[in-house]
Image (tube, rainbow, N blue to C red; front, top):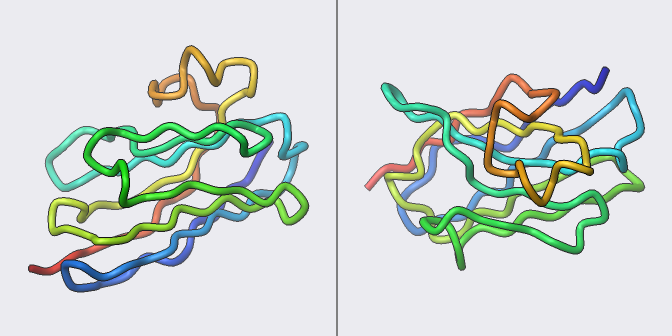
Length: 127
């Protein structure tokens, strides 16, 4: 089992920044790539970003490229999502999730492949 707890959400204005964090406990953190997903009201959960087990490779959905940056600290069992230039359309509940690292290259965008999920943190961006 891996337990994931997100933090750092909040209400901000368009153009502001937020940094989300996800703390992991349980099984060996480096066995997992980590993903960030979000779900807005009335919409399906969508992929936002993912980072490899070592932190050297990250992928982003097109709408956040150049604004969001994923990082991880394996010594502290944490993964972060730095979100800059936030837009109202970024409003959603954000989830971190753990993916077996061997699946990273082929399944990083598929939420059904992730093994563990946090409970989410709300991000609201006003215009």
